Length: 254
Length: 254
DNA sequence: ATGCCTTTGTGAACGCGTGCACAAAGATTG
DNA sequence: CAATCTTTGTGCACGCGTTCACAAAGGCAT
Ligand SMILES: NC(=O)c1ccc[n+]([C@@H]2O[C@H](COP(=O)([O-])OP(=O)(O)OC[C@H]3O[C@@H](n4cnc5c(N)ncnc54)[C@H](O)[C@@H]3O)[C@@H](O)[C@H]2O)c1
Ligand SMILES: NC(=O)c1ccc[n+]([C@@H]2O[C@H](COP(=O)([O-])OP(=O)(O)OC[C@H]3O[C@@H](n4cnc5c(N)ncnc54)[C@H](O)[C@@H]3O)[C@@H](O)[C@H]2O)c1
Image 1 (cartoon, rainbow over the protein chains, first blue to last red):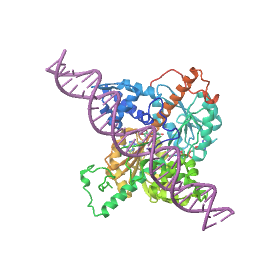
Image 2: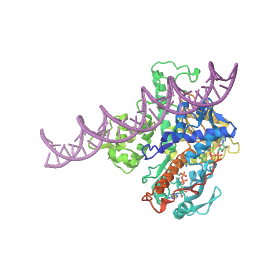
Image 3: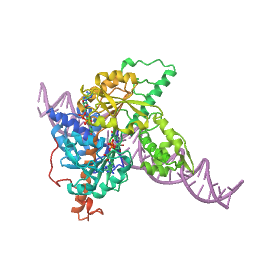
Image 4: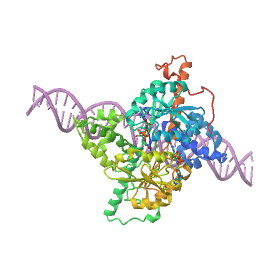
């Protein structure tokens, strides 16, 4: 998972477990797709498959929101979309600033998926004077000098950091001082923030390293199995034998 | 957290807990910084601060790798860098393909942090015939028709998907069929893969929604506190204006 | 060599998250 | 209206992850 929570010791906000909160957007996406197909109701089982989770887990998640289902029938799609949207705070508009309009920042600015859920890019900010005024995604880049004013004028509470790692902490501090209380950090650094400020990070490099770990393990087990004289398992039976960590030496598709 | 694991019921690979594996890259980054400053040793406390974790957790994490510390002194930086690198499989070269060279894919291709940890971009692949041959990040984009051959020829086991959501599952299936066993998915979809294939996802939209949830909660608590007569918290002026645009007005997302 | 000081490595307790399994609830059919 | 069938909502048990707290280990000074 590319996501990492920082600080905040499993704060169970308003009774909703953090793990559940993290899955609500997943359910919302699946429900939105059903809504667009005009499907009136779904069972927990169907929705669970669509969201890629266990149906019991899904039901328990929904139980934290209240009892919105009908036994023997399932959940009303539209109603659930509304309830989850409301719970996530998506029924209001969230102005967002992106700081650091380089390769990644520009891609984010161009990303359509932003606006589709109530997030509005209020400003693009970069420290490079050359960038100032240049349009990116149909919006002029503004200089870092304007940061505090922009945050204040637009009532921005969510900031995205896409600067190089070296400048991230400083940018973070300016954002927080200006009133931002939620930060999405793409720079590969640990950000230190005061209490009350949420930081979530997206770190490509970490994700790849985690994949490499498992990849290496798979390769190692395969080699071990081969060396042990285990004949190359019947890979033909597709996903027959369980995962790599089965007691019995399993072999991976190479 | 922008990260999400798919499938794989908390597989404790080779005795190393998944949660620990996810933190190793964090430690490695902090250690690399220390190494560059020629710091010979660090205590668990210092390193924990640098990595943003609890020191007891860090020590327990390292204990899964073996006993690499010296009591009363700390850990040898260089040695630990090597041990963690080896454990993560970073002592070898991992060829990676990126599929979908649009805004995001191009940014990823241009990202220098890729190569710095043993990950080598072996190919850029896109379905658009117009893109074929066009250089991105000094590398010609190749057409999807070549996908299987590229994977095979280069022994690629890690694939990055940066296509629109609609094409992601199909791309995923082709990658897996061609031999890829680890996938990093940027498309907002749930990917279905056979056992033995690892999928990690990076989902900007989900991260923002989680932040919005907490943001809403903070605003609510502040409002409640204000209403209850509790004077507004220390943070008076700047960050006081918590709410986004409108306080109450609610707008449904698409 | 002895004693003191620092820091590791880990036993143990606790809390969170997950998933099973099932009773209760409501729809539906006859 | 009663019987049956479907699906929810949740009690419960279990395992993972986190954290505390401390004994053991090693360095260092005298
Ligand atoms: N490009 C990717 O695919 C990718 C992937 C993962 C992580 N990242 C991380 O995201 C960050 C940005 O990557 P990039 O490839 O876009 O880099 P980039 O060099 O292309 O862009 C960085 C931008 O930030 C601006 N900047 C620098 N310091 C600033 C400051 N103090 N305040 C405001 N703006 C400032 C620069 O002028 C530049 O425009 C880096 O930390 C990188 O490690 C990038
Ligand atoms: N741009 C962002 O900042 C951002 C952020 C988060 C998530 N995403 C997601 O990442 C994905 C890519 O975003 P983008 O902004 O780069 O989109 P984009 O439209 O700019 O690029 C998509 C590219 O994929 C190619 N493509 C389409 N179908 C393909 C297929 N079947 N095989 C190979 N290539 C194919 C297209 O030709 C195009 O070049 C999307 O799923 C988007 O939701 C993007």
